[in-house]
Image 1 (cartoon, rainbow, N blue to C red):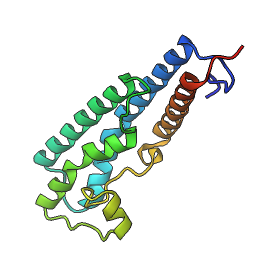
Image 2: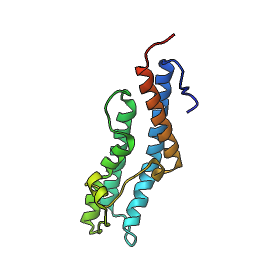
Image 3: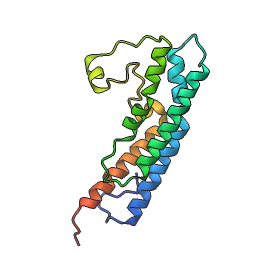
Length: 160
């Protein structure tokens, strides 16, 4: 985050650094998503190996997450897109249906969780970047700070 001085003038360098941070976030998520999905799935199916059908679902989710994060990091900072965690949560939703088909009981959820994420019946998450690993956490926080910086810089009036 040292690359973004609070009082620096807005410039092309800020845009380039924001894009670099986005690419770093994309790579971090791409490297973490499938191992995280496997671990989450295995925690729900302790006595059962992941079937070919379930592996296909996980492959599809992995691809969908990759596409969604690529779209996000290639968008302009001003576009009203959802954040990376919300995008991952949305793309993970098909795993709920797969677990239902396998007869995996959904855990008890509190009312607030049900209201906030009605489709996440199995509380798959992730709730934070850290759920995906320290590398994703650091990349996500840095990207978010870079996005906020760039957003504010665009709105700052030119002053001598």
